[in-house]
Image (cartoon, rainbow, N blue to C red; front, side):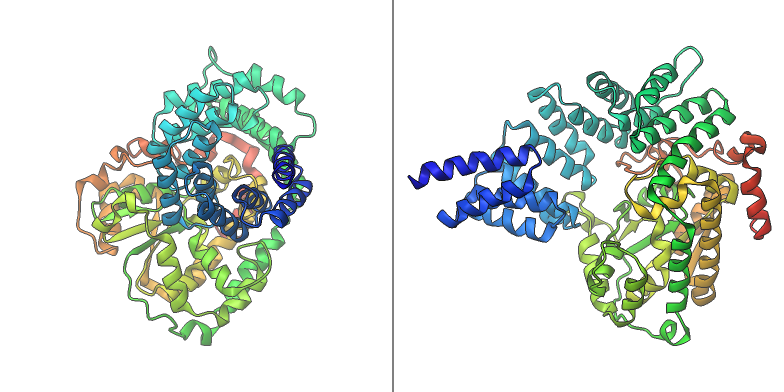
Length: 530
């Protein structure tokens, strides 16, 4: 009978997906649809296959069809929300989450998925109860504890986050990301540290490059706490070198991008006023990673008329869509060339629509939002063309501190724009490229850009904050000086530091490493940056 055959095919498709066997799963779903074209779960499973293959548009369409056929299934809404969030369609993702929550579910994977989507939306406080619900339903799943710990860290609940990371490691000692994340939260002492545990795992890690990377970063953080800076740097070099070797990164790749962006802005192209967008909402805070962008973001978003949208990739993503270039890289040489022919008014509309804070943030009560993706510094000229009234704040920091900080920070492992950070010399060369490009943008746009020195901001916070607020046409509010009291979540590498009052702990950190950084210092001196 057809119904029995469909049932067998359905079970087979689910089993294949659970085993990661996408091709036979796809074949089974297709066979189901030949018999029953509107079979909701076959469309959903095909959507899950597309999601696994990073085919987001297809996944969204297939899961949407499944929802239309079976509108009371919370699992469908949860994974629809996940797919939407991955393409930055945040308001739609939030709506899908709300539909799933209305229906309710005891499926731990669905609750974890909903919580992960809320985390992507910056709604970490709302995510935490759902993570806890998933854990209650499936208490031995280390991934649930890891996801919970991340949200707890971003909301400033550090002790609870530490406990959750420890639970991850208890359940799965080789969950390497948990070791590095835990190290960032703890202050190791001679009496209490995890070096023995970390070394034992490192000895077993074999050829797992990312595992080695996480463990080496965790050990380095603990060595730093113990003031053993040479050992910290040596173990960092071990982990980072393995990752750089795996990637085959060459600084020439980035040099070509920087050169191409400057060449794009010849006199004729730079002079063209393309967009008629009048919005004054966006404030871009950008610069080298680890240069103080999160600090300025927190200062600004402590103002009653400003809200933060975090490290949004939306400008680059929307530009890429309009450029219609085929590569998977958001920014490459072909995309830079294609920007000559895009509609910058359309880009401004798409960017503003995609970046508007989600409805739950009550953004209608604020007149500005901060987009603090540091690497948007590459797009400054294109931002000026699309959003001529946007404010752009460029952070600057001592070259040795910023290069060392990039080297010792574990960024998103698979985000290629940080590949330079696995080598100290590459970090120095990348910083030189950054400084050269900033000089270029300033030669075109002058005082319409504001440069902020991290060191001056720390030394004279009120003076510098007043300058920043004045540039953004914002009145003085004492809350901006007390940014560390801001209760909003922080989802960046500086999530711990920005919950502390302004301090100079990280200024001059490079000097603690003695002659270990001589080669970097020599290079920066030779190119005139020291």
